[in-house]
Amino acid sequence: MRRALLICTLLTSLGAGAQHSQDLSISWGGIGFRGDVGPTWTLPTQGSALTLGYRYQGHPHYAVRIVAEQGEFTASDINSGRDDREARGITVRTQTQSAWVLGEVTFLPVRIPSFRFQHTPYLFSGLGVTAYNPQGQFQGEWMDLRPLATEGQGLAGSGTTIYGSRALSVPLGLGWRAHLGPWLMAQAEVQWTWVRSDYLDDVSGNYADTEAVRAAYGDAAAYFADPTNRQLTGYARGQSAQNDGWFRANIGLGLHLEKFWETCAAFLN
Image 1 (cartoon, rainbow, N blue to C red):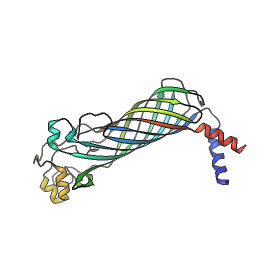
Image 2: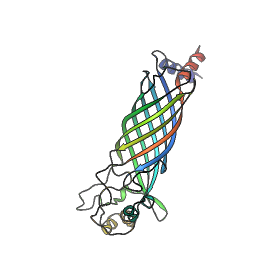
Image 3: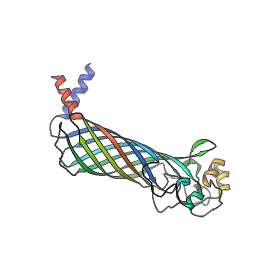
Image 4: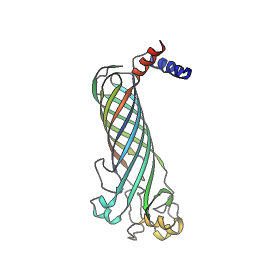
């Protein structure tokens, strides 16, 4: 009981003072990946993402958000609709974890705080980090592709090293938010995320010698390096000049923290 009173006191003191608005949100939506594997462009049907966010608004038109997102998508050349990719035959599943700091600009002025209905479209962008782990399926088992050096990374004379598992990422999007009352808000967003890496799908450079890959990393690595066994050593396997990214559309609900501050204050008094 004492601990609950202490927490309530601290949170009430944080919520008092200058006019501002804070909320916590959770959102879910679909992902459409754009990279070297699968269709060149798709609607958000290749996977899904769960997003958690904290938003602080101290001005009628500007807000700051901290966002964490867990996503997963599957891309397959079989579904690409392109002859060159269908012949390549790569399928990849990638999990992503992202953390961003975002700035937000609302089109309509927002009353701060507000316990009444109001709504506005908004733009947002920011900067953060995305961790990614591409996987492929071999003999019924999903395996991490990065350690298998499917493009011969690290082999003698390759001039390449194993790519990283994290990269800078830049989200840019458009949303609509409605304050439904003293406790809840609803939002819908579309977002493009650009990642400073071309390896979210494990494909970027040229085909490696599959026998050299087999000798260094095993049979699974040789299979993933060239699933259709076309023996195209030295030819382009991906497009290294263009980094990867994904499109995401989601909907979510949020909890106004001002009502919590008010409830705590009433409880303490």
